[in-house]
Image (tube, rainbow, N blue to C red; front, side, top):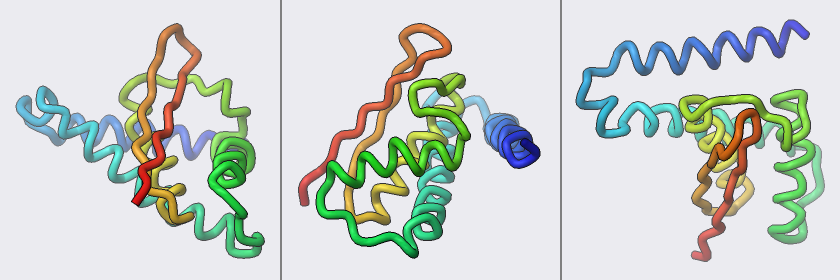
Length: 130
């Protein structure tokens, strides 16, 4: 329980810190979102390394996506992937987290998120073939 509270506080402080340190132009041009997404990317890369060090290689992209949706997500957020309560500022970090994890598993992707009705959030992962 303490881990979850600490993560939520850190996450909130990151978003607040990025927006407080930005000037008006950065906020308007979306640079804050980019900074948060890049932070998430680096964290996702590191976490996936730790979580998969003793795991057998995945046989295809479907197995990787299953791992991200079930094991990776549940380990980080302690919730099923379909129950994330968040807002658009937090989504940037989370999209980066997913993209970074996939990147370290050899999948180049674009991850976007959409909130149609709170608290539901829909993530779309577009895999880019190299």
